[in-house]
Image 1 (cartoon, rainbow, N blue to C red):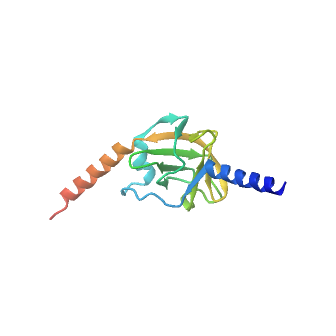
Image 2: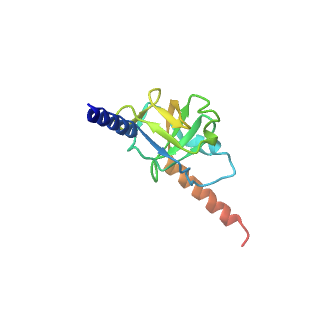
Image 3: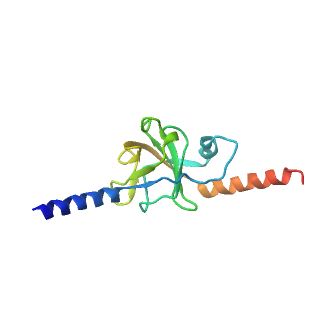
Length: 151
């Protein structure tokens, strides 16, 4: 009986680990003089119900106490809005964030949560970020700024 209880406890912990991935690495993304939210908003698509992920993301950037961008690779990113505020101090002060996935690798608005600081923050909105276009525009702006500098 003890072995069965131990096995069930280990299985439960493994299942919980499969439901959320955490990252402590904020994204190292192109900078600008504009606040992050203003830089990203023109590149957001319409709200979507869900997105699929492989239990890993490359980084994140807080836009406010209840909004962030999660980067899922070299050219894929999503905007997430959670019920505000997320945690006692909001997302701007979070060191680690994670996502739950209730349905096999799919993160669903109004069903799944952002996890930070021991708190689950329900996701109220998901939007895909046109990250390729964002990066192209950032590179073009940097190139134009470099050309306008006196040599």
